Image 1 (tube, rainbow, N blue to C red):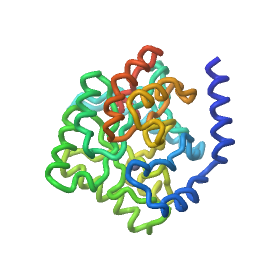
Image 2 (image 1 turned 90 degrees about the vertical axis):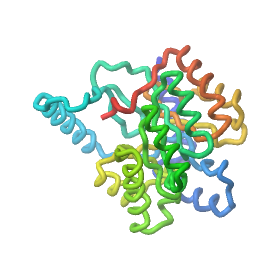
Image 3 (image 1 turned 180 degrees about the horizontal axis):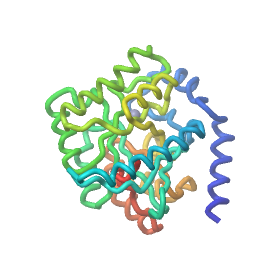
Image 4 (image 1 turned 90 degrees about the horizontal axis):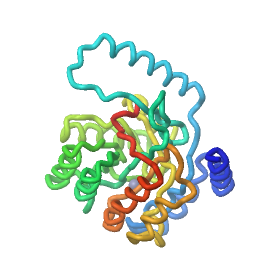
Amino acid sequence: MKRTVLSVATVMLLSACGGDNVNNDNVTAEDSNNETNNEEHNNESNEPEEDYANEESEEADEMEETIDENEADEEAVEEEPEILYELHSDHTVRPIDEADEQVVLFTIDDAPDSHGVEMAEVLAELEVPAIFFVNGHFINDDVGAQELQAIYDLGFEIGNHSMTHPNFSQITEEEQYEEIVLLNDKIEEITGERPRFFRAPFGVNTDYSKQVVEDEGMQWMNWTYGYDYFAEYMEKDALAEIMVETELLRNGANLLMHDREFTKEALPDIVSGLREKGYDFVDPDTIQ
Ligand SMILES: [Zn+2]
């Protein structure tokens, strides 16, 4: 039953979007239309962007074995979180062994803008882990740095969403490098920890940016679905309903949300709606 639903959704996505990197042209065209920040993610359609080569999953498997071996040798200096999930090439999370498969991953982009800390407090209260994908321009001053620290201190994973939120297909390799690596440096300066995950603005990754991400020891992810960047869902109730009722909801789904007031207000209903449907929430610490 679930398989059927998943296949239908996949076919719909493919026919709607036509495959790899098809967004790039749209992004270029639409970017010149002077979008506001609220609309900046209109290009981020609900599609898996592209596949890793199969070798990479094999590599991941090998890495997993290495990690298992190392764990046996190491005295636990800090308690290492148990690795239960891996990031799949379609940006969903999948259980490695016996972990619960009916889960979703919460991700909050363009943080910490005006509502990031409050969103983190709401999620902490609801006991829902999440990744906050941070931009450099939000943490350039003391206030922003303190907000980042506050989100980190509440236990949330901090991801890299680039220094200035550019379209990576429109900047030089040197600029791509700085967008990723200098933000890692900055985040580490503040929290003491380098990000493990990267999400490209607009979901536009280049071969070069993927290489930088890999060299930095990070993984990149796009998302399964998100709605708070579409005008009709920029309201608490409409957003909460679609985030729970969308046919794109499935095991391991990677849910994209943003640092926005209406998204903050919708969080409790999104969480309770997903829980009512039997979904639990992946702790990013448990992703390999
Ligand atoms: Zn963004």
